[in-house]
Image 1 (cartoon, rainbow over the protein chains, first blue to last red):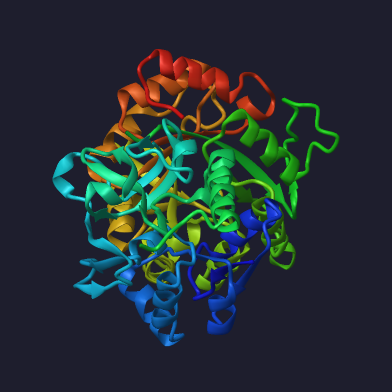
Image 2 (image 1 turned 180 degrees about the vertical axis):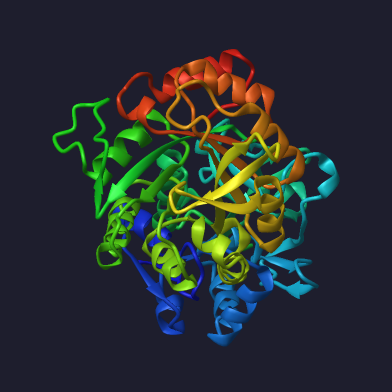
Length: 208
Length: 252
């Protein structure tokens, strides 16, 4: 069973719809018992970083998510859910994140001559081969974000070029993030969710 | 680099697609799910659903339509028409819409844009504008109520005001071009893209494949919307994308 963290954010139900369409057993939950007993977690997210952290805190989910990650459970953060996996964000002041992948979340610079938000279909280039990322190489997926992640190359599996290189898929062992919306990226995106399910089923991860 | 988006627009009247779609052999030409799936297969980058239901009692049907489409078709969905409140937005977003477009109601009460952006994020809020050139005043005038009623607003100024209030995208229909099949309104989109930095969807006037090349080569719009040329199979989305690609325009 994959638990989709239910904390009142925009894309939660669309992630569930995609999982249902793929016939992957899943449940929407904010219950620590359900979350810690799941085989894998999806952390969706749309909107502002600070508000999302507040919503997770209000449901006392921050320690639960950290415990789950520590136990080796596969976790997939989507869009803002990916950004929440990092140490901190500078969106409307500094806010601490979950700290599951080293790095920080900063604004897309306005001097690049590109429009912000980065909204629409953009192509992914895989920088490290990985079962989670390989299906996305040279494929376009749907993005909507005004902030991006700065992290070390070792955690980046794929990126896109929007005036600067921005990570589109990240991974630190069992903790994975997708900056785009796999639930809104057609067949390519659904394949990514199915790849996460495979990883959950195979236990193909380690926590050194 | 972001791909330029090609967006079919579906008119929905209490849950049924009007101006039936016949580019593929659908058993039910008015079924929104079947039509959305067919457009997904063609490579549409996004779908716009325009609720043209006249009566408020039948309005909830669009929520049900979006719920069904979002369970079967996995691409960005935008809904416009008859959205008057943050509650209306909430119902549609919860049903599976990714963005909501406000038009007349935002003109009457611009705080609707900021209230929606604050609650759901600017990326969810599309400001739809119906524009008509006023030769006397030498400016584009904003029209409301389905283009039936002129306002005092200048399109460019209203666009700036809407973006300042929190609109994350503009969907601008040229009433001068709509239905003429003579191409998109290039000067309008040149003026708009010079005035604001949010993504802009061009709408109205598309009649042939090269109209897409013209709007993307001559203006900085991010997306182009069309209805009848796609619905009636005059040409297909792959036709448009092939022509754009040949012309050096990035498409998916």
